[in-house]
Length: 356
Image (cartoon, rainbow, N blue to C red):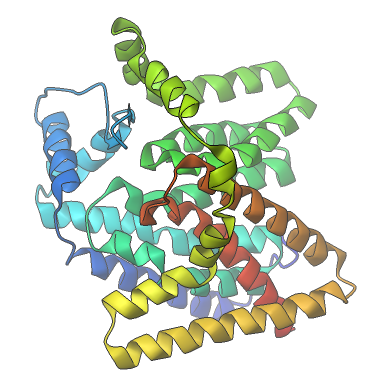
């Protein structure tokens, strides 16, 4: 459980208002989102789901080799049923994407305390690589929210030893993979939550439930694959056979740079006027320097819980960056979205230690 479980009514009101404002600002960006080819594909299939078919057993395609399950089309069909407009669909996607802000607060409060949650939720709202996701209607726009939802449910399952939370985390991981397979970075956290269920009554029921709810969203795709000879499995083996893991790992510094400075550079260079670009760059560098100073203070401090969190986050971040670097010879923007919660966690922890 979090260190701080009680807030005064005034603190709750101010925190809630700040989170609501950040969420509203993020959602407002999506009302101006444009459509690209992938957006048209998603909207057409979502419209079909909500208006009598045809019902595709597959979802969005990936890199010409794979296709996701159809869950994204089912979710996107909701705003197309009512109120039934593209603007409504864009706003709906914006709400899902902006959910990262309250999710970050809730997870941060669980991991450490309220102040850490507030700092992290403010940082994750800053412009970065995820700003690209606000420009178009796409399933990748909700990756950060999906990663954070997995993390929050896994944290609840671990801390409270709740089988229901472990089951929910397993389902959330399956849904997250439909946002983009890079969300697989959360599989270890969800696996730990499921492992925790081994120490609960009726543990085998809980573990079977975790597996069942994880597989359920993939059933349409799995049935279609079985009927056609598992073409995606063949494509995966071919892709792995032609990959060069050693060469990809040499790109680790590039992916780390993308995680630390790349997002601010993109937002400043392409999305903002020059004066604002300079401001956002200075602000971003200031945040990093403050976090580094806080990290040094934490290293020499005497707060074991925060130090354990710093160590765990650092290892998880390096593992996630290595995983993303290994996936492709080049890393597109949308494949870095899943890394943002890890980087934000480290920055927020440094800021938390710096202003104690």
